[in-house]
Length: 427
Image (tube, rainbow, N blue to C red):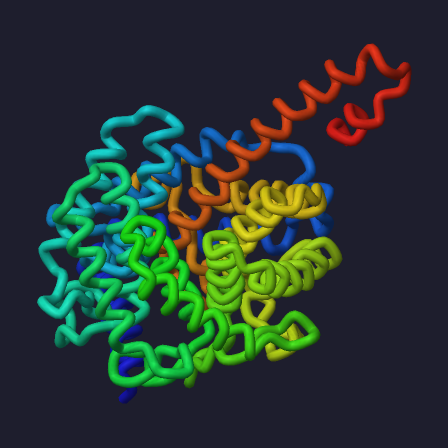
């Protein structure tokens, strides 16, 4: 019997230990069945807000706060079958910047405290060599993980920026230095600390963390390692916009991992001022934007060259692509990216529960419908993280658009009876 089968059986048996989860599970299954049957089949259903962004964002953050365990770490998921998982170091790390962003936007001290608790827990589980272990905390032999270390590094860098703690900076540098030492000469990361031992282009997310660290540490080796990996990743970019080299054995190419590649390249391009990286990310993002606009949705998986894949929706990947489109709008000013992201966010807001059991309200499912192939029957903390990021970006950028349009309108009022700038802003 395979490990995956045993895990599925064990999780299903969780219903026997927690029968109170049966009713919410049936309700979720019924809700998704009805929605997939009767939902509007065009993007116009997302052109006006039926769920207020502020309300949805608050619900998502509240779900993340409820998922924080007693040790300070954040659970990987809430399963409709087995309940909350134990703390997950990887996701705890890259949720920290999201919590700080929300706290700054709302002035909520409880969210700042949650970020500080998460940081202290991560410092307590860091390995002596500077790395962090893969997997759920305490459930397997502690083996260092390149990807997990990179994602946690994002949180440590942000925690240092907020606290100016010398200890946190020292630990972040230790994590970054370990990543530098295990990088291959061609710029990839592979070997025992890489997932399945292989090199992966979605480790561009690790490069993003190193670029963030370089901005604070001012150590050339950190920026050099990030640049070196992005050079390697860009060699896998195809004329179609597809980026090869995700290299996941026994797994389909989930949109989540495709979006990881694009997001890491884009954010590195912005931080390291690499136009080639921004252009490559934009090319891939544009292909997915056109697919979304044409088909109303993105597929849960894709074959190489963005060919057909599984028809369920990977909600995390959708939220990540919204983040990418919003950042490209911020960089380029192209309103088509903003337009697609707003529609994507509206779709995602409609798929989270705003009332019901506290374990469910504000949670982002792995798949829509809930029985889809990616993290089935679970609400996942990284899905909440990326949706919160997308909604925070939406709030910030739409507010800026309104300010810019108001300024342009006032400046042009005396110059012309026809106001092209104001008309463009309002369209």
